[in-house]
Image 1 (cartoon, helix red, strand yellow):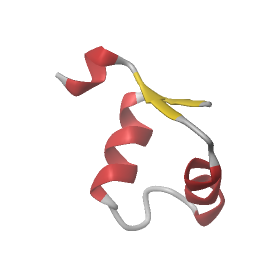
Image 2: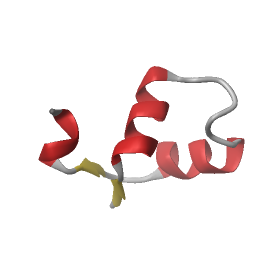
Image 3: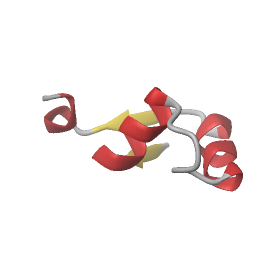
Length: 42
């Protein structure tokens, strides 16, 4: 499981070019589970 902080979660879901490198994206997408803190959704 990977727990994403607010910045990573936002940039990954919005697919903001240049903000996440290919290695980070690959790790997130290869994870069995991805979690985000409930407060990040506010």
